[in-house]
Structure formats: C-alpha cells, structure tokens
Image (cartoon, rainbow, N blue to C red; front, side):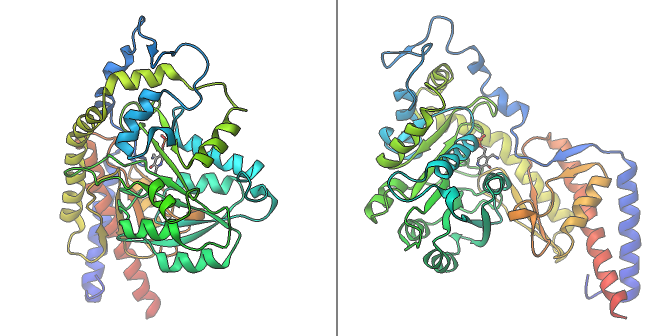
Length: 426
Ligand code: PMP
C-alpha cells in the first residue's frame, strides 16, 4: 500500500469505500466476539442432561445428594487428574466456573494472605504480570482488586523470561502472574518446558509470589493431539518452589459451557489453604453435576474421544477463517494472523494504528468483533494492531460472511491511514 503512487492510492481508497458501502447495505448482524461453543458442540454433551438419572446418586461410597466433599468427588478428581497430569490428591473438583475459582483464590489472598507467608495482599500495593496479548477476563479480575497490571511480551515459546526475571527479582509488590500455558488465549502459544521451569524456579522478591496457571485449553487441539501436559506441581516441588503454581482448568469447553466442572490444583499447603477458606463459603460441591461428568466420560480416554468430536466441528471453521483472510488480505502486507493448532482464537494483526478503526467499521457493517485492545491490560494495545477473532459460535456460512466483510474493513482502514499519512506529510 505504501508503495502505491498517489493516484493508485486514491483509486484503492475509492474502491474500498465502495466495497464498504456495499457491505453495509447488506444489513448483516454477525457476532464473532467471544469464544463460545456453537450449538452443535453443546449437542455433543446432550446425553448429560439425562445423567445421572433418578436412581444413580452413589459413587465412591458417597451419596451425591447430600452435603459434603468440599474437594469434590474422588472419581472425578482421579479422572481429570489423569487428563491434566495432576495427582488426584492435589486436585479439587469445584463448581461450574474456573474464573470464579480464580476470583475466590485472589479474594482469599487479599483478605487473609498466604498461609504463614506474609500479610493480606490488601495491606500493600499489589502488581501482577500479564503476558500480552492475553485474556481480558483475567485482567478484569485483577483490575477489580485495584491491582496494577504490568504487560510482558508473550513470545512463541512462552512469556519473555528475561524481562520477567528482572521485574520479579526487583519488586516485592509483584505478587502474581497470569499464564495460559497451552494454546493461550488469544495467540495459541504453548509454553516450552524450559520456560515453564524458568517461571517456576526464578528468584522473586515477593516470598508469596504465585503463578495463576490457567490450563483452560489443555485438551483443546484443533490439529492432531494436544501436547503432553507438564507436571507443573512436580517441577515446582523439584525446584524448591512447591507453592508457586495455582493451577486452574474446567470442562466449560468440553461439556456444557454454563454447567461444567472447574478444577483447582496446587501443593498440599495450597490445597489446605484454599479449602480452609472455601469452607467458610460452602459446605460441599455440586456432586450431582460431578457424578454426571464421571458417568458421561467414563475415563480419561473418554475425554480425549469427546474432544476429537469438538475438533471435527471447530477445525473447519478455523480453516475457513484463515482461508478467507488469505483470500481477502493475503500478501498485502496490511495484515497477518495466527494459524492455531489449538484453543479458541485467531489472533489477527492489522496495520499499526488501525485496529480500533477496523473494529468500528465492522460494527457499522453489522459485524461485532472483540473490542480492539481487549487482549491488553486496561484495553491498551500500544500499537493498536491486535484483533482477537473467535470463530467457534457462528455457522460456517455466517463466519465466511463475517471474515469477508472484515477483510473489506481491514483494507479500508489501511487505505485511510496511508492516505491520511500522505496528506499529512504533504
Ligand atoms: N480461562 C481462559 C484462558 C479462557 O479463555 C476461558 C474462557 N474463554 C476461561 C478461563 C473461562 O473458564 P470458565 O468457564 O471455567 O470460567
């Protein structure tokens, strides 16, 4: 675009405007904002709605109808322990949302501090490291506590360890860090074992530093099989930092997004700390839902078989997105995008300074996108270039319309920018 002669640039701008007007005239109403499962993915778990059935409530010698078992059903902890590579005794099976568990864990730290190690987090300023691009709801949880968020770059094998080492070694107020170690949201990066080890073993000025290790996409491969899940608790113990990782996961994108089971894992100390505080909140877990999940999956192999069915629905949508982007803006130098092998998102990068404009244009044309900047703390993408695409929810037909329309917006925003730069420069 930059190499076009003035006359050619004018022509491109005119053409893009005409295409955009035509797009608007179609009156679309499409939504690719959030990574929700599509109805046919939810249908994969339809049988769960009839489970466990009216005469099935006993498991592990426990009557699931009654109070109790705050750590969750042993059978489900064993089943998902195998999936998540965590010993059952280190894994708690909880309610329907891992985000809620993260919020709880932070609340407990805020009010009570970490058992034995230091004052309540609320008693002095707290900062968190946020690999970017990252997950807006993580940032929102910490922002709700008034925690200062520090963006650190997410590289192709994990967060930039050199930058992080220096920060955590020098600042005792940095108490935590968000991590999505497998198929991260939104760039689908999987951390290497070396980066994981470095994060778990690095020197931190805060003695109660914790990594919020959110393994939300551990088994969510789009191509082939998901990577082996690292035994982070074992690594942390080996390097002498057993209490550093707080591990989270859930079945939200395996079974029923609004009715799954969440998991929390950590060292013996951390589990005792968590359950101790949780016991002030509730008597037990929803064991009927947990039993439903045990019956539905049967075993860890059942989870893998089930996830292949999700893959069959999702993979064509992701292929469609990357093919439509290639067709619409490929080779133009104004956009690049990830081709993820797992997770729920395509991370699109447009010409710096145009992401907000692209999202606004798309909105005008009836295509709802995740707000530009949402993958950054405070919504501030310093380059204004990232847009998160969530292909899962719409039908393939709608998705094609949305991405084709998006390409028109990307081209128009780029032509406008280069044109205005040139006019400004004259
Ligand atoms: N963590 C990450 C990284 C996610 O992308 C999502 C869903 N978009 C969640 C957690 C949500 O988890 P839950 O439904 O268990 O609250």
